Image (tube, rainbow, N blue to C red; front, side):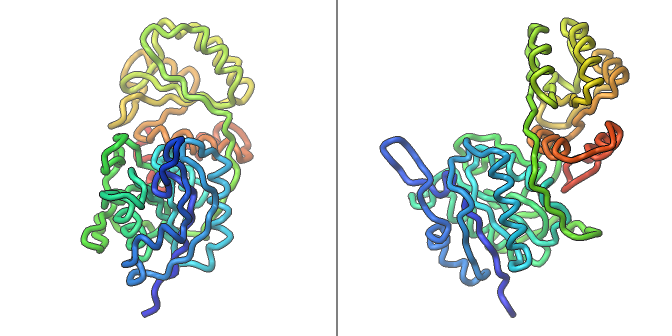
Length: 336
């Protein structure tokens, strides 16, 4: 039986770091990374390329475009892809690639580590080997994270721990699979797609997250609503606009709507999602302005989906609204 051909994309991150006088810095090449997991030769045939070499704190939509273009360029030549990435923005990249590469019947696995691969007691070697095992499995497809033995859908991940090896959790969605003893144990069958794989490379990052805090001054609304094309308002609980912001919010929203800008209400509560129709502070505002809300989406998926949507042409708000609520890689299960 022919082994699967898997392409690994190096992007930098802790997994590829070495110690320097200035601190950890990415320095290990993708080919060198593979050398630390000799057992991979029994799993698949690995090829490597270096897409970029950055600390993931420095990752921007430009780097997501580089990754999506590299995967598109090599898509027909390989059976799957593994992206090595720093953990700090890994969940954002996984969500972004879920929108930039859709209907992929080939797996795109994103992984990283909390410690460099060349140190003792690192999690890097097991994470990397598990990623190749998952990428070489016949049932794998689409964009997923493999980390600490868990498979997390690309739109559902959040980094919840800064140092622990179980850094990532799946938010409002079960783990579709785990990798145990070098075997994939699958809990959710792979999704069946109609149509060919689709690649997108443009993202519009004119977006701002306004986190509400008790007593926030209303003047901030003038600035952010003027400066950005899209505002994501991280509200309290299930979602709403406090009374001390309502008058200013109505004032700026009327101008906002006339200029074709986008407002999305999210919740600061990580699990279980929003529902603006529950309380008076949310219901009237949503009805008056037909606001988008995130429901059970993660903030990472919300931001990257909005960036993806704003980079595409639409006939109007209603079409963009339908696309925002269209389920992509399990990103939203509840939408009113």
